[in-house]
Image (cartoon, rainbow, N blue to C red; front, side, top):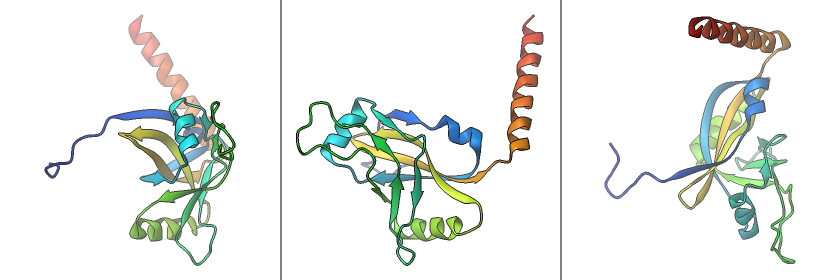
Length: 159
């Protein structure tokens, strides 16, 4: 049950990172906000972005500020000299406790923070970050094999 005054926000998905689900195993996920400029939001509303090579990182070894790196937002078509850089590092908004947990998890061997979904939650842009562990090649093959057998079984039942 939600507290009074808080309503469900309408969510509109901008982009999903399907490649991440194939390349990595999802351990857990976290919703974060992101600091954007006006032209970036307008480009996102038009759907002009790519999270294919994006990842989140703590650039300062002593700090707990989380940044999204290699997230490409195309320049706004009707923008002027105040337009944004397409691949600048963007700060993610995470509370301190979550930031400490994420930093300790990332310091473990082989764990990465990768954006899974970017969406509008009401007027706000949100990012679903996944704590990911890389799959090995034989794990990927096993998943493809299982998917194919499942598809064949469904076909046989329909016929």
